[in-house]
Image (cartoon, rainbow, N blue to C red; front, side):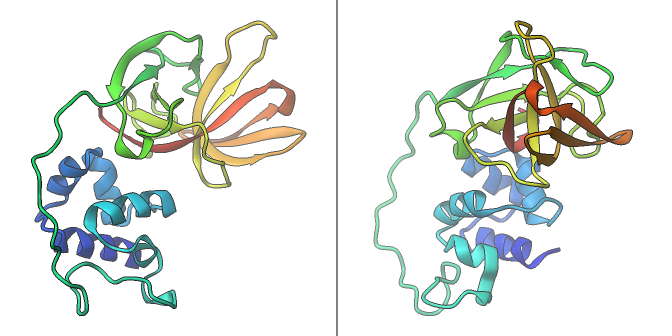
Length: 227
């Protein structure tokens, strides 16, 4: 387990959640996604650290870097020098959350691709980290081309505003015909330049290459799980 994962687990316990599933339910995130961050299976970055920091009352930079940062970065709640909170706990707000569309199709192509033709399969509640993203959406994974990272039928939640960098998981839309619907691919991002887009596939292992002129969009997958 990584140091980051250990700090996240420590923060969760100090916040009063005995089990990871309890914290995931309280935070409104998919349990498998949270557990993967806490057990070190999947890394988490600043956006997720800020979200966990707000909910667990710890400094997000402490979650990311621990004692390696200098200055007045806070340690987890409950440590020496942190006073007891003096706020009043109110009843939780109950109401309709934000829903986002899920795109996809029951059977994908050879590489798990599907037509991104605007047809909505259904709607799901947006996870908290996407609640402020007006154009967030989700896609349903088709096939096992990205197993074991993403399994058939799993939901990928997409933040189209976040910049993509090497090693991120993305949904890329490729328009092969000028007026046709783009094909959507859930893959690992390798590079995108003026000549080509390169994506990595796991099962079977290979690289997919697309001419840069055919790339409609490449969007960041913020998290995934069973909705």
